[in-house]
Image 1 (tube, rainbow, N blue to C red):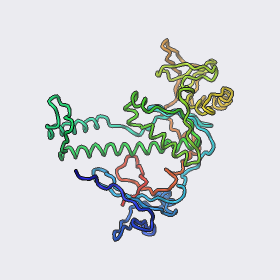
Image 2: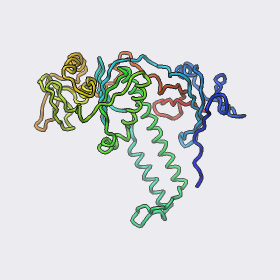
Image 3: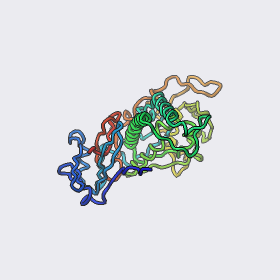
Image 4: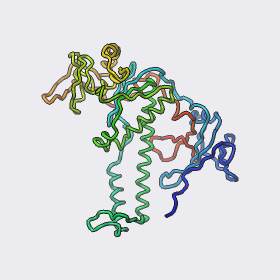
Length: 381
């Protein structure tokens, strides 16, 4: 069996072996000189600002793009990555992450946005490619299958040229989805951190998400989003606080009566116990998450926060004075619902962006063929 090809190569310093020359924008590796394709300063000022810092070491790696191997260089810079936008330091943001939506409540904002709405999984196309690969594997490797069509244990199949071509096409589809998903995660995380760098959210059970909403988790990857948000919050001088789900029960709690009432998943609006109105369930959970102190509900604190947040909820439409109809099943219908597609940046006057993707600045370069102009932080060679 042939060994796997070398995927990356890096040096320990920028003084020997792989050397980045900022004057020429080239990589020197022995007698080999490789120029990097860099955008101009007007096209990407953030990249050129990051390049002003001293380069600690370089890493050269390859990635498969459209079936072809592309080479990239990653530069590890000294210092903290420069910030692109202003940041709301010290502010607390409540977050409620669902399988397809994200509710965000800040000091003067409340929003319910679709989770990764730009990531559209072409289920029909991917299923077609998977079936084509399976047919090709069975046709060219009949010795690997039993009479009933199941796989023989211990058998190894030889991929045909057609199978390899289809597999490359399928890998390209998934690569584009992964790139767009990562871009959408970063954009949403930056918008949230523009409201505050201290984010409070319930601890998610990713196993339960995968079990109940498998396709949605595959497309949106909430676990990866939470980890990226955590890293960005810490880089911005804040933190992501995980709240105890079972003791707080954000979706069941009513601060007006201090009672926990279990509701069916189909009931998306919560009737306040004092009869003052109905509030959207996810937005209300995000509000309660914002008010939590030391993993405990404090009714007096929540009441104070509710008085300040109520005008914002009324203005955005997530709080209604009364429902239009309450069916015997418990389902609540409101007279008017706000547009779910309202982007989060509309409620952020000056949207803040977390300081880069890590503590060290890494060079950025737009990769050809990526959807939505996703800019990889790695220049092409």
